[in-house]
Length: 245
Ligand SMILES: [Zn+2]
Image 1 (spheres, rainbow, N blue to C red):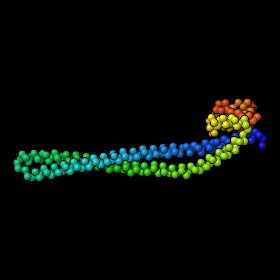
Image 2: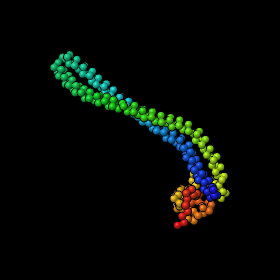
Image 3: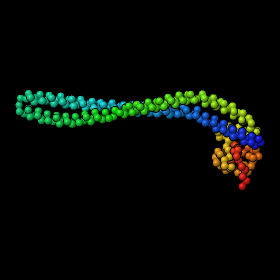
Image 4: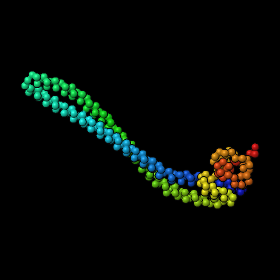
């Protein structure tokens, strides 16, 4: 294996590890954010449920109120009917008859209103269990996510430590001039953004910028070359074929 091949393989290996580390660190960072978002959804649903319960209680109270009005009207009607039987004069009799007619008409309206109010409350009632079920679903999801994260966290952390050790070994294999550029990039842009493979014989795998033939030739001469557009340190794929034209 030539030196060029060794450098190529080392850079490729480092890039792979850096990408894996980036993914693992990303999932560690993401987990609390996911939990926070899910917690927010639970809070929203709690407020929604409270609103639904309040509306339902109000509809039930409306129905109850209408039923009381019907009962009060019935009572008044019964009272007038007794008065009618006990009426002493014709004038009084006629007045009570008119009153009773009016009460009966009012009762019919009140009855309809009461029925409507009861129906409305009954129809609305199903919103409560639906909202409660949704809340339970959100809480279950939160618990499942939290449990999964707590189980995965130590595994991910162990993987990170293991990868970092392999990374150090690989980094120590880099020739000095490569190492200097690589370390500077690591400090400035982070591991995952430090390297890029040359794609389709001439494009930067990081930003798709076309790499001049001159630069490709220099890479083949074991020179550390960075992309002039995104500054990533470039390395060649195993099947790279140098095309001069
Ligand atoms: Zn680039």
